[in-house]
Image 1 (cartoon, helix red, strand yellow):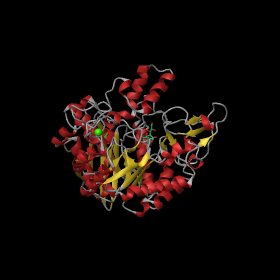
Image 2 (cartoon, protein in one colour):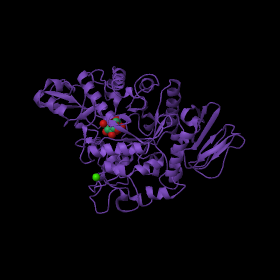
Image 3 (cartoon, protein in one colour):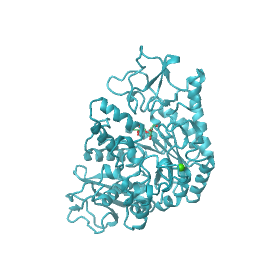
Image 4 (cartoon, protein in one colour):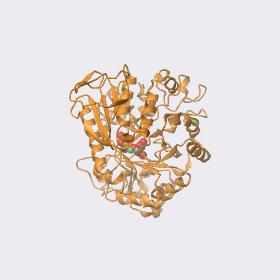
Length: 553
Ligand code: TEU
Ligand code: CA
């Protein structure tokens, strides 16, 4: 395991969809233990597990009822302890997902608040409406609808930026912050080696005012006390152990704030997730539309974050996929003819960047978006809410479904495809139906066949993960964008102590030519997704459909 996070790669697991060992149709912690050798083989250093704490599961565990106990559907505390110990044996650190912007309305704190206990009411944002049936502000919930819920007995509303069962915590209350520190220390004492903090840049609310021009996000994103609260959390908890890796999920953040969140010397977090590069198939911030991905914008955003974060000595998490995103091979690649090539090309772009790469379960075997053709097969609260909202706006059910199929978070949540047996080996054949449907392409796309094939997507990821450990320029180098205005080439140069790395990728399924390619004399090819050597000739580089190459000097 590399404890230098610049050489590390993180593997993300959504336990509910990973591996079911007791045949109830839900993945569990013993399933993760069972698959540790598979994860070890990939070569990663950390596993980030999405939440498995006690929860009513209205948002699949991002609605936490009790941070100190395990939801029995996932397992027991003994399973967690065993998982941490078994990970450690294999040199893999466990990272837990801490949801501290909000708690489930079933959490003890919220229940006491609802009983009228003023100490706990102040853990949340209870506010008077602006008039009869008019909530305190016009802010929108991320999952649709107004962000305030009326409570009759108080004649007040409480704030929920996400589902109505996810009440926002009041971080301005010091007692809230102390409770949170206690939770983090509890898990550190159990041997957890890292933390991912859910939507952590939303915890400091600026003012409860109507947003005349938007959905309210300017009042709670990167708010006035955010750096103070993060520094305090750092100092009181994980900051005492330099080897603990932390990553903040930053919703609609600004790069200037991220210099601070993830600066080498700012005393906040190790790194940040930002999402601007994954909104290139949105219309502005509007996700529930169908627009083609804007490649020029994608490059511009990635390069801006790469170069500016480097200039400010700050660190990025680099990724295409997580449990909230569609599958990248379906989104920016090709599920059909060039499935393998495009999956490898996309991996190459991410894994040679400056940052810590994250691989989301199934990405390493080229899993695709769901093939659901009926709304009843979708489970995610966000998808179901927006399916309704789109129809309320006048779209037909079939148009609304088409949009949900493309953007739904369920695309990333179908069961991990382990082999070609029933239910893809996620659960056994005689078990309950999996909680969400298996993609019918599992007979072709599965881990077993990927492990057998030396030329597979899995083995390509394995190689990229190993290269980051072996080749210092990948882990430590500066970055310079290349071919910035080329319509189909994604290319960059990394440099470190006299060494150079050139990455060149064709983002599309047609052969293309890069005319002013760099001089490659003295370079050797480190890897690529085609087997022939096609180095540039006379400054011209021809790249096959979805071809990617990595050269080193
Ligand atoms: O997600 C935060 C978030 O804002 C999203 O990525 C969200 O899914 C997107 O805006 C919807 O379009 C985090 C978690 O990753 C997500 O799974 C949770 O649902 C959410 O926080 C609430 O805890
Ligand atoms: Ca189970």
